[in-house]
Image 1 (cartoon, rainbow, N blue to C red):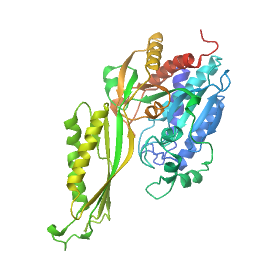
Image 2: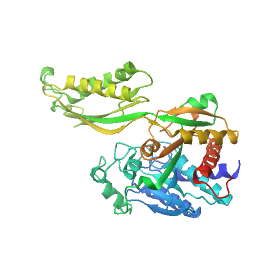
Image 3: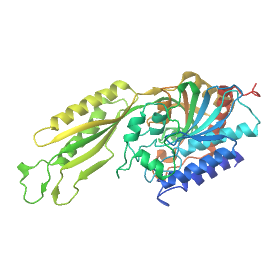
Image 4: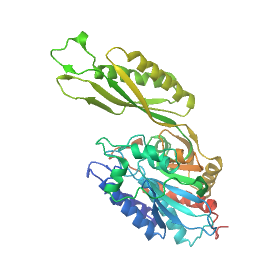
Length: 412
């Protein structure tokens, strides 16, 4: 094992220790105690690698290697550091560590960039605490307004600003990032699927990230006693929700071409075994590589909801997130492929079925993304695992690509 691979392994392992569920995977929710621990680790590592460290008013972390051109836009490289509940160690942190190790290679080779290089560690990509997902990147690019950010609350009624204060973050710091200060964004991520492993190829160069939308649907009915309320006098919010949920998979199947739809969250009120449910709240996640498929499923979902919106039942639909499918930048794709070939590292083109911060940054700058294989194709579980050797190969490709994008002075 070479030094680069060993450092990658050690850092991912260190970050994985900041979890609310030891021995049951990584649970690191945004602005939690574990967020604070991981944040301190990342900032200390950035300083150790000679970067100028700052946080913005959302808690995103930036470590800057200054360039020789005054006030030039930066090449950003990184990912997120939050997790889903009981998730894995690699989803997010692998990309942050990759960014740090690209800087380490700059230091080892005494390279000075003309354009600055910034390692970034983003908050709340998963949406596990405040919903919606991609919050750090959406907030810093202004796609999530400061007002909407302030109004977000978790399931305990704690607001973003209250949660930030709890771990000592300063929400008054500068927030929206001027797109003129960004030259490009690169992200390494685990694939979270089975394709690269099946092909026995260590690197996937991402061509397109699927579009996705997320809805929260609330069904209001009427509570009643489970034994004394006749069946024809009921307005059962859970039965209505179940009828809608049962039909959602067929909407995606009918659309085809890889379109998927998922109900992943369901809350029932008052949640008593002998009480007819008065309210249910559930989520719907729709994804496709083509915009028209997402729009078609949304239209059919609304028709389905309207059909069940009848006497005694009131259904409200709230769209939490909408991101169009995003093609990665052709020039950066070309650079990544060329760097892979130069290093004699096998690669293939691949599309992403998951949303990533890269799709948000693609709204404001040129973006490129690499995948490394996921063992068994699994992710968002404690069993999530990617080989540090594959991550090291990706770091070398990113290093070659970043040298070109930052126009390093010693680079021929």
